[in-house]
Length: 396
Ligand code: NAP
Ligand code: MG
Image (cartoon, rainbow, N blue to C red; front, side, top):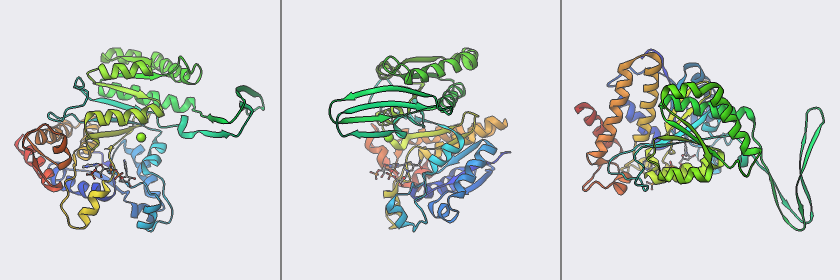
């Protein structure tokens, strides 16, 4: 390696897996270079969360990061870790700093059948992570009256629309988005489609929402036509816009193998639907991509708290490390591509093949054995599974 990866360590069971992965699967094979940031909750608390901001800045500087799952504090965690404050979600902080879009894709393995039988390739969901109903303003209307939508320009000019003349109680909601955020989202999607050579689908309800959703459609189309059309044609991939209800029907009938860009709410709902339909949350990868082409790789699952408490009690755990290993291989492959180190890219590819082959050969963790069609799976504990992957890797 020539350029270091930004390494963001995390919490609980995934922190334990993190070290095992480094010791068993990375350090013996590659000259691993990282710039280490400890995003474990204790250290975030010590640094008043400065370490999270520093790790995001380092990611902008170097271009590629790999992140372990981290605790997002709630009231119980404030007590458990004696926190000075209920620190914000590190993922939210990093996403805001990088202005990034999250792409989630399942890892497909023979023997773990998607519920939708024709899905033979992964579907990657790209969720817009800003605005709409997630930044809403709501009023519970107490009784009769007029609800209005008012915009007051910086120059004092007003635009006013009647929402509804209420005859009795009801509800209203105000939502917004910005052209800047939609533009970043669109660029991240087009770049990622080119990067992974997959078609890009985008869908909204522009026939009903003739200004709001239409604005999303228009921004995507304008950016595509002026900046990406030629590149897409050269790469042999396609940008495809349709209505959200039509998209849902087509997704189910498809064989997969494309990126599905979703507005914030659609992405929230559809990513859980797609993840579940592919089989297992512990087999979902996640990558945050900024419009300027900075990448942060991680697993989609959390810190697997329940397993960690068993681990602390000295009990055996069988936690699946595949998504975390794929975070590392994703980052190493990207580093290899950017720095022109073919050996590093080849290493990442081979380690991924070793993960898949280990499970396909019938050696897996408990949760995978429950959904696998493999007849007599050998159920391994957390460390044994990583060691089994190492043995497969050595034999490849
Ligand atoms: P979780 O860590 O995703 O785990 C939920 C359950 O899913 C586990 O109890 C386990 O089920 C199963 N599971 C998830 N990953 C697994 C794996 N790799 N191998 C085997 N089983 C797995 O979610 P959580 O327990 O709700 O959240 C724990 C912490 O993670 C929270 O503090 C939350 O803030 C944080 N979190 C972080 C991120 C992130 O950093 N990206 C994302 C989500 C959540 P069984 O117990 O039934 O075996
Ligand atoms: Mg959700």
